[in-house]
Image (cartoon, rainbow, N blue to C red):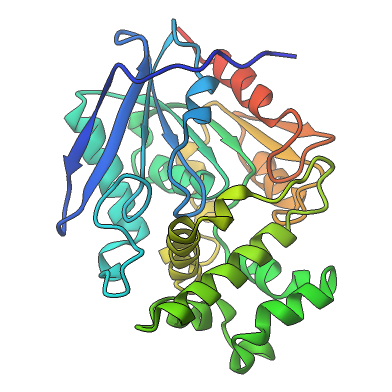
Length: 316
């Protein structure tokens, strides 16, 4: 099995002013003359951690990581109840990626993403295929309403007691309403206790629906009040707006990237994002390779190593 690369510190970093008063944090790791790559984190709202740096061969890659609008080290954060979320959409994030590419004087790059980062990466590639030399996508998602309803409603059949608790804060949405929109309203409430409770329950559900994978452990970040609020607010904002995409848009547009080589990595135990999503994408994408990890879920056993091995294929 391919080993991950040792921990590494950035050789360059900064804040890039983009539109609408936002500034995004970015960093570069690896070799300044290496193959450019951009890493798109999940969530939305999780931010980039140092672990993602280790997927890139530091002698071969010039890897760029950044925190998407409103989270991580980017400013302003979504944790403020009066944050203007109208300037935080998929289109805004795509514009930020392009602004970062131009700022760093990069012509094209390998696009790498995990979970929500897969959806974002697919949107970017379909809009700017000439800027993408290859893709490595782990825990495949495509941002459809079916995927959102699966996690927030249909998974209640798998975890009925936990789902009852999840919905207890939003009884009006329990039967047929939009649970994500109801939570989004709670997370924007002026009462900090209401926001805190909503973030706690949302993140409790996030931990629940990934808990069937073999090596599952609760995510310690969900116990951090600011992280849990930013994360839950970002997810509910995007999901309540269908990720700001037309339903099925990414499958319709797959021909735009048919000639871009890609490795899709997915865990067989990924109950949150069932394997049929990755399989359908792979079958529609001639230049893609599908790697199914038998003991992984939405991450987990073998996932970092598989991401590293896939990236090694696209080194110079």
